[in-house]
Each structure stands twice: as C-alpha cells, then as structure tokens.
Length: 295
Image (cartoon, rainbow, N blue to C red; front, side, top):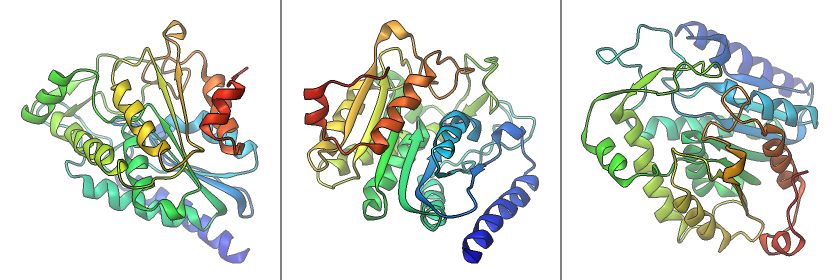
C-alpha cells in the first residue's frame, strides 16, 4: 500500500510540475487523475483527441471512478501549451508518431501498477494511439475502448491534401463553448495520425489486438466509418468479445462525442455502453442474438 501511495503521489506531483513549466493553456486541459486510496480491480488509461485536452474524458473518467476504478487521462505531448498560436506560429504538436508511441507506452507502464486489469481507451486521434498500443502490447491490456477513432477522414481528397500541403488550419467550431484546446494546427501534425491509421489497419489483419469496443456515429463528419468497420472486422477475427456500435444519424451525435458541451446531447448513452462492455463477457455473436439496449 505504501508503494501504491508513493506511486500515485509521484504521478500527480511530477505531472503538475511538468505542466506548470509549459505553462498550461487552460486548467481544463491538465492531465486528470481519479485515484482511490488503494489499487482497484480495473484501471483505465484514456487518451484525448487532437488539439484538445484531458477535459474530454472528465464525464467518462468520473463515471468509472464512481464504479470503484482508478482512471488516468494524461495530457498528450505538445497539447495544452499556452502561447500566441497562429499560422505563423503554430502550436507545438508532434509531427512524428514516435513521440506519441513512447508517451503511450510510458503511461501504460504507469497505469498497469495501479490496478489488476488495465482498460485502455481513446477518442479520435487518441483512439488511434490506443488502437496502436492495443496491437503492440495486447498481452498487458484487458480491453480497449475506441471512440470515433481517427483512421482517415470521410474524404479521400482531404486525406490527400493533408499529406501534401503544409498549411495551417483553424477549426470551424473553434468558438464551441466546450472547446478548451487549440483553435488550429499545422497540417503535418495531423498527417501523423493518417500514417498511424494506415499502419493500424494493415497490422490488424494479421495481428491480434485486445477485445475492443468501437463506438461510432452516423453524424460524424470527421472520420471514415467504413475504415472503423474494417478495423472492427479485423479485430473480431481474433477477439470474439469485441463489439461495434454506431449511433443513428437521427441522434445527431457529432464527432466530438465525449462531452455534452462539445455537442453530444446523448452522453449518458455513450457512458452506459462503455460501462456495459467493460463488465460484460458476451461475444459479438451473442450480443447480436440478444440485442443491445442502451436504455
């Protein structure tokens, strides 16, 4: 117990000291840790989305904490840094996947010591990182939760432009009251995740991942639903306890599905689905037979 207390205290203090030195853009972007005073049966490690911050996993993190589990949501490299960012001075986002990959492996090691079973998760580009880690170190991970993972965009022309044009892009929804991260980014920083997405889709064909839940939305205008389905099919070949769920278009759940402030008016459905999957041992075939209700 003394080792556990020392570890959790060190994680909190070292992370705060590092983020103070950045300095941090907004307190909502800071790493989030939900720690019980003892190791828990499950521990969750979540990666937030591109240009955003750990605030995206506050609702889900708090929900799993209330279930009796430890939760870690570290701030991704290059994210959440205060500065006068614009086209001439873009935010310091990584342009190589290796930094994200080393970061993910570091936090996997940290999280694994805080509970019996490790549950991995990620949203959008954070889902890309989680999917990569689930294929790389599946023996250490019990299950993976992927929320609208970014494997490519909905438009092949957009993907092509991302790969050849080094310009700066500002988000169209930058004034959304639920957005606390960067308002824009240099395109090469996004290309990293296209490259990782291709690697993930190729590797998943012949490499077992972990049992995985993929949550998508028909109203998502940022990611490619077909490639998410392709990834699910590849994972399912090896892991029968994997699930796929796509919210109907009529619910109008956007790509930014992790918080109500960012536009998901049906957030309790997402949280309930994630909790149901984590506690279930049903295979996808059994789920289809029984039917899956979120209410």
